[in-house]
Amino acid sequence: MIFFLFFYATFSFAQTGNNIIKTNEIDSLISVLDKNYNEPKKLYNILDASTKIDYPRGISKMHLILSFYYRKLNKIDSAFYHINNSIRISKKNNLDKQLYNSYLSLGSIYGRIKNYKKSLEFYLKSYNYYKKQGNDKHNVILRALQINIASTYSLLGDYELANNYYMQNLMDPDFEKSSIHYCQLHQNIALNLKRQKKYEEALIWLNKGLVISETYQHHLIKNNILISLCDVYLLMNKSEEAERVYYLVDNDFNWDKDFYLGMIYLGMNRLKESEILFLKSIEREKDDRKSMESYLKLSEVYSKENLWKKAKENKDRYYAIKDSLTSLNNKTVIKNNEIGFKLIEEELLNKQLDIENKLLISKNKRQSNIIIGVAIISLIGVLCFFLLLKNIKVNRELKEAKKNEKQLLEDKIELRENELHMTLVAIANRQKMFAEIKKEIDKFDKFDPNTKILKKKVKDLMVSGDNLSAISDRIESRYPGMVTRLKSVHPQLSNTEIKYCIFTKLNLTTKETASILGVSADTVKTSRSRIKKKMNVSESLSLKEYLDQLTST
Image 1 (cartoon, rainbow, N blue to C red):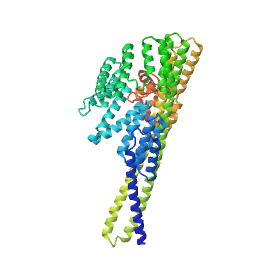
Image 2: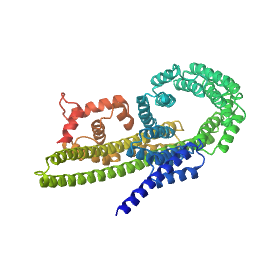
Image 3: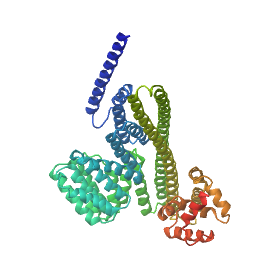
Image 4: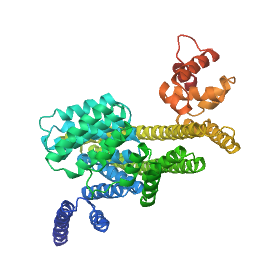
């Protein structure tokens, strides 16, 4: 028996030592990976090796790297899958640094599909974590995050806040003035100004960045700044200046030369030459995101040449691609949410099982302690004291288990809230897209029968998208019986008025409600006031307070 115990202990020690050696080998393999991560087979081999020895840090890190690899290839579904796995494993094993690196990467993925609000949410999570660390070695990450946050605020239209972040970096005495990131900062400041149509100021910052990039021979950023200069000159209708800058870009630089030269010739009214260049750009580009702008500009060329049929065909192609990409982005977001929800559900299920096991173990321990205490309390007083302390510990574990159970319920509620929010965002995006299409159709010949049919179809789609059934299931899961209760107590309310009540109950702002319903903020305020009178709500109560009382009874 003693020999067996000795053999088992020796074997366990050897196995543990072997796993430590393997984790060191995995860390070493990760550290020497090509930073472009161009060898997916090698990445999956390291992931499999980490999984085989149950090495959470290695598994989480490889999922993060694979997410970066797929994001680079624009395979967003795969990128979401791996980043969600990285986050789940990091949370489960308390790998805080790994978790917030994953949040940073998730922010970049959301930025890629133009979901800037979600992108900003995860950038800020990551930024707050690294800022709390108070460690100088995180300065580079913090600076990069500040620039990403500023760029995202700019894309969301909060130009002043974006500028504050940019200037905070610009004034940082530790920011290396000769670095490529310092050049990029000037370009980002100019881009923020360009979005505000402050073109003259944008040119000043771009030229400053150009001087720095040429001085320190940052060829990549130099060419990017030249292209940005070309963009600004085109927006200012200075085609000759744009042409001058165009020929300063390095010949071997990979960019859409034909499209930009076509834009320049279009500004010079050299229509035939610009037409040829836009067609060449479309033929060369395999990515619809890049070719769609060429179709739009071709439509403009043909309009100027009074070739209305060709103009319409190219504009239709532009909107077809835009519609397809919008639909694809929405599907990607929804699919990612489904993956995320599934992972959360699995995590919650595991937590619930752990809690149940802990409760069972704690209950058994407590019963054992009581039996032992009764048996020997009269003989060994000291042992009774020891058992009392142990019992207190068990009770503490029970409290902790109940606390975890409460957290589980809160997580489920948060999951439902997120799911409801995504439904509302999808409806808002769909209505906004149809509104844009309707605006463009209004520009066509009003007496054309095909145009009338098309307008009717778009209008029907907008009406079908703006109905109560699209969100009623989600509302029922969060506030059971709310819609039925409203219709029962106030049968005089229309479906539109019920929707106003639902959005008020959900604490949506006037602006958010207006965006979803496709109306102005003033219309929302007027409608809420009218509904309150129609429902005979007391002046001392807000509509929200009344709805809370109604749904709680």
